[in-house]
Length: 551
Image (cartoon, rainbow, N blue to C red; front, side, top):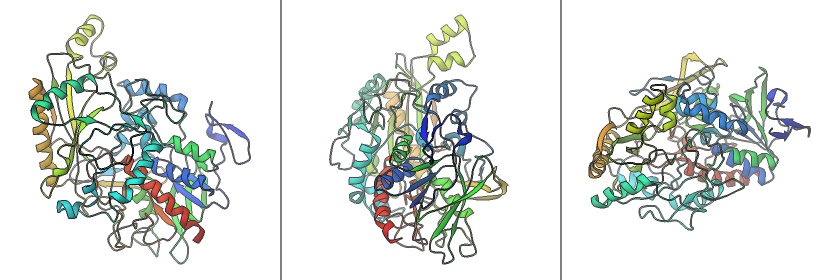
């Protein structure tokens, strides 16, 4: 049973949410919208500084005791990916209108903890040139901050999340201290890749992971469940409930299933006055605060701002630049896999332990940045094969002997350029459970990224051929899909006519509103974004703390 004290001081059972007080908090200093990694970290820091903080999240508060059941859903073919974390097609409705279909609900979670409840857990820093793409690569835009500005916050973020890593990546940007925990050792299949890569002159190095290689922050070391994506039953992999719970311990109020419908500003149009939200009983409330932090992700953040249109902001709140929702970016996946005539011990490790940044800084106007990944989970696991129902008894035993244990594969993330024609908008022809227009995802991909995928595939093929593998599949420029890293839709910049937030992540239009999360990224590089999200959230929390006295 999960217990907590409600605002009257009474202990309540979180497994029964019907009697939870979801009314507004009186005299709140800060209202944070979204309890994913960005919102939870900001809430924790501001609560620690003594501010009255209320967090509104559209999804539920999941019971940690249910994670074993969610793991069983994850491995049973009957359930789709959204079922693991109680996806709701009506609540989470969207439309896709771009050149490529965008399966938004395949990899998002609404609830306290957000996307970190099902993420893979890789946490790399952006490279220095990622902050200066226009200057150094001749394409894209420069960030208004550089790596040096974020470097101390990267170190703090690694401590906050709990990162296992090693200083063995010769291509990584400079760092100031070791990772909080030692790296996970290379897997058996990594050793196979290492032989081929050595022959080809390709460097391999460890992957920094936000999962415990040893006990850390009152959480256990990884126990090897192997279902890291989409659920970690042990809690060894970081998720944002760590900071949401800590924020509550420091006095913050976290209200789940509080779907914010719009933000209302005052008569001068310079300040947000309240967040209007709806609770499961159908009641509508308005949470007032001195400051507001929007942390609803790269899709729901611009959607909320667009839904908050008014006479003063007819194109959406904080959108005098017209940039809200524009420049939607993701990382593209490139992969190649096959089989070997020897054991690979596939699926003994549920996450990546080795990668390669060796080609990353060669990015220029023609070639996008990319990193190579060496998979530990190629092919089906024995459990997946058994539960598929495709064979039984002796036939299943024969399939396990013949088809399990010799798969091998590589992946890669490829960066795409920000493009105004790639956007998150409102589909006014379709509404969600509350009658609001659903988000429209219009995703387009530039030729530079697609041509880079061809190059990535060629490198992957060369490694697998050096191994002697028979290549059986490939995710190429034609079949590529997203990594579900939603970036760029409320971009950061100095010029208020071309960006939504300033370098401190305060909106140009509203003096008491900040936006945190990957939506503020001007460019995306090719690194998984969560560590940068966390670093920016820590930096923003300092700014908000200092600004509150003057609001």
